[in-house]
Length: 246
Ligand code: NAP
Image (cartoon, rainbow, N blue to C red; front, side, top):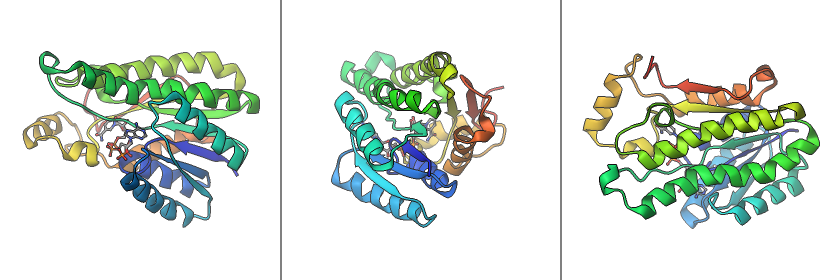
């Protein structure tokens, strides 16, 4: 049985990706931020995954912390033996215009959204290289491609992910490891629920399909990139935005 780690899988897009990969037949590692409330949510996601007949492991780890990512990768390897798929999904926002943005809010978003990718890749790539097989999918954003007012920290982190994706694709291609990114637009999750109605309406007006995306519509693309069907695709960024920018 193949194994997939999904970071930030206690809710939203990450939870949906975990369920989709479980449906695809992967044993799944459901990473959650180490708190009691996140653990409860992760256990509920695990129960839904197990309904597909796969094994699950819930691991509390703050992905911005190098040591906690190392421990998560070691625990996964010990439990399941292989790591076939890594989905770097965990992310946060701390939005405000640059003129008002505090240094700690800039640093926090970079640590969780960007440094976490290094933390996870550093430990997982060693396992995948030995296996001579791996699929890495990083969750970027349209903000990383086009920028977004009020998100200089977030767009910097998401643009960095694209550079990291292409570099890793080049460094590990010869070991049969692919690394791709998806760039979602406006997806219906707890992260976007908190946006003001005015901002939601403004963003929706630019979406060709005229509606929010659903987390399942991100998960299906991740499922493809995690599968053998995408074996000749690497270093790419697939926008999932309902035609937000063309
Ligand atoms: P969400 O509902 O807020 O979920 C984010 C997940 O990340 C939660 O499970 C959260 O756990 C976890 N997380 C946060 N900090 C963490 C940390 N330090 N360590 C481990 N886990 C952590 O957001 P979402 O909308 O599903 O977003 C998922 C990804 O898609 C993010 O990378 C986001 O930037 C990206 N994205 C989302 C949209 C959108 O429209 N929703 C668009 C483009 C890109 P807790 O809840 O326990 O804190």
